[in-house]
Amino acid sequence: MVEGFLNQLPIGLSIGAVLLLIALGLTFTFGQMGVINMAHGEFIMAGAYTAFLLQDFAGRSAVLVALPVAFVVAGLMGLLLERLAIRHFYGRPLDTLLLTWGVSLVLQQVARDLFGAPNVQVLSPTWLQGAIGPMPYNRLFILALAVGSVVAIWLYMNRSAQGRRMQAVMQNRQLAATSGINTGRVDQRTFFIGSGLAGIAGVALTLIGPVGPTLGTYYIVDAFLVVVAGGLGQLRGAVIAAAALGLLNSYAEFWTNASLAKVIVFAAIIAFLQFRPQGLFVLRSRALT
Amino acid sequence: MLSVDRLESGYGRARVLFGVSLEVAPGQLVCVMGRNGVGKTTLLNTLMGVLPTTAGTVTFADRDITKLKPHERVRLGLGYVPQGHETFPQLTVHANLQVTLDASGNPPSALDEALDVFPRLKPLLKRRAGFLSGGQQQQLAIARALVTQPKLLILDEPTEGIQPSIIIEIEEAIEQLHASGIAILLVEQYLDLAMRLADRYVILDAGRVVHAGTAADLQGEEARRLLAV
Image 1 (cartoon, chains in turn red, brown):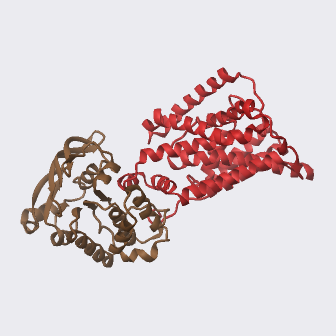
Image 2 (cartoon, rainbow over the protein chains, first blue to last red):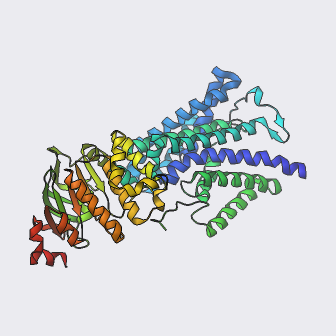
């Protein structure tokens, strides 16, 4: 019983880490730009298939090579989606939801046509086989990847001119525009980074399971829940909510079954939002309070 | 310097401005006045490109800017301080100024010069803008516009809801900027302030210019009636 309980810990934490990687991207596009991008899940899938394709060239090191490549591939897909479609729907969240849902279905079919309907496998590097106690190296690697991404995002947002510009647009778009900031360009960059992070999450997922055309759909709803529960646009909120959701999911599944676990997670989120509809953290200022 | 010719604008199908025309000469301070809801803020938002122009033209420094985006107008020399002491609340005071400086491409000295106009902000540089008082936020809002080194500064009710001691500082700052040669377009409901500062004034009523003239004319019965003072 105790051993089973301990074994769930790395599973819960690594699911939380993957959710965090996905939610980081959503934090930008949904939490801060107000765009509900249902195709975000397909950027995860694109990242995972990138790792699969790179196996032919990089063998078992494909995961490492794929991290930057998947970031760029998924980022470019996001950028294309923003330029061709989403930018015409800013301020219309329901329309954006429908549009991106349609795009996600198209992308899933494209993946089916290109790679086939059955799942494919990406081989982990040999140095990721093994464990420290109950914690397998591959799940530890995913945790490290999530921590590294959070640190990189924090540094980018707070220490670079581009990050400051992004924050300015997210906090007050109109003021940013009349302060001389090219908001359209910032939107493009935001979408590129947000979608690129989904690509990285996709590569991480290849370490703990097979890759299929609907890979993203298993995680996208939970990732949205992380963003909402963490507080829209709040990095630290996303970190805590992702860990909590990952662990809750994992332990609920351990004690019940996969379907009931989902019910428990959704019920917990609904109950939580009754008490804190604004999420864990919220933008505070004298002007807003 | 700024020439607005038969400008029309609004929100969706609701028209707010009906053929507004006005001029701001280099170095001049023009005050736009009028009661609540007559279209003053709509006029400024249209001048900045935040709202689309449905008819008419806006010319700045001999260039038609009617179709330019807001950031392109800022690059040309329009500085804007919107109503309601707006800031980027989660950024520090310094970051509020720095982000504007980065976008403008101006030298770092532009930031120091803006702070010299409002020395009260200097000890607050590391504080988040959202936690400043209303008066301090307004000073930051004006300083942020000054970082862009505007040729024409557009201010929308800069003293609205501000404590009296800071109103005096803001008024002095506007006088100082005016004296330095920056043209200013000021929306102000505080008649005494407008009469003290303005070279010329324009009164709007129901989206139309109904009176325009020199500051001395503001004493007139008709002007006071239109402003309901």
